[in-house]
Image 1 (cartoon, rainbow, N blue to C red):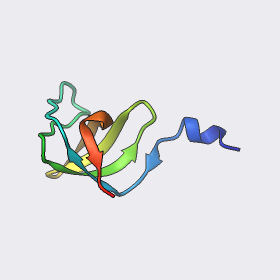
Image 2 (tube, one colour; image 1 turned 120 degrees about the horizontal axis):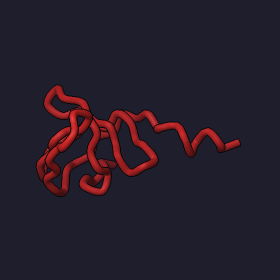
Image 3 (cartoon, rainbow, N blue to C red; image 1 turned 135 degrees about the vertical axis):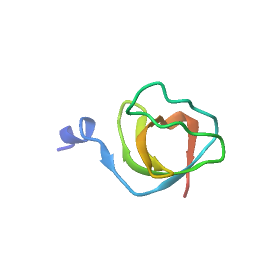
Image 4 (cartoon, helix red, strand yellow; image 1 turned 30 degrees about the vertical axis):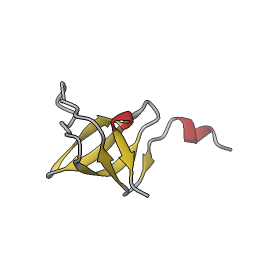
Length: 69
């Protein structure tokens, strides 16, 4: 049964590289700049991921990054 998959964020410990700059506009977001390496903590199904950059944790748009393989 995959019904839980749709609602629950996916926990992970991958890294990604920012492709574009993103300036946070809310307290729960982080500002990223192209070239930043961000540790992905959680992938949400709404297109926003939670990550850590320079000891700050917050949300950023997944479309602004390339996930490391």
